Image 1 (spheres, rainbow, N blue to C red):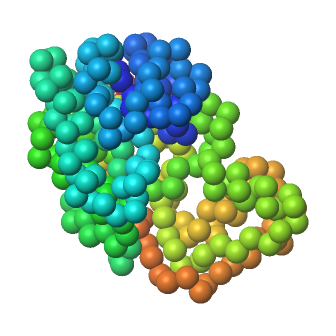
Image 2: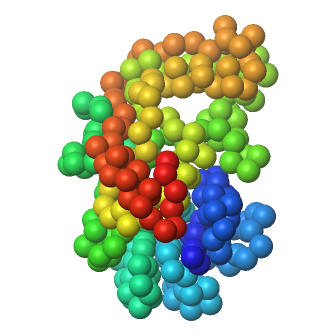
Length: 278
């Protein structure tokens, strides 16, 4: 299968590209500023720029969007974002409609939820309370209304090493502790941190199978302090544990994710000619 990964040089995109390549698929990628190690890559600013030339050049059978939402849209111009995103999605769908099994996969976020209850499943209604969450909700709505065959993968914090690159949260933690600085981490903000390679595997399987709809990258519920504490162990910094301090002053939030569709994806992957069981 020919797969176009939008944002292939990014932290998540690199891991996703690696998984597809390892599975024997032909991978092409787009990048915003830095091509990274991709052999076949083209500069493309998503979603502002016209994606049609990229689609025409690569002729993909599946498109996976891992690119981060940045730029002016983060300032809250939801209407402008919807217009640009919808144009890009329409162009992708028009291209994929001519290819049997053509599929669009989008990586979204737990930010689509308010954080008032936690343990969100795929059937829970998005109710974002941040601009970023509103952008992600908008992106999901556009895809669901335009792409007949799609998968939306929601993830929380991504962590670990992606082709040698460490996630920014643990990277920042390590740098501060090595300087002897005190790091405060919230004890009442809960997430479902997932290893970037596990998330990439889920995205790959969702693309290669006949799965259609939303699925969550489920992982154990941790507060930010516990997540940072886990980082100390993984990075061999337990001797600096005294510099990591609990902070209970932050307002409560729990956007932890559960999946009710994981078994469905596993079944589809097992029966898919492209995918393998998770």
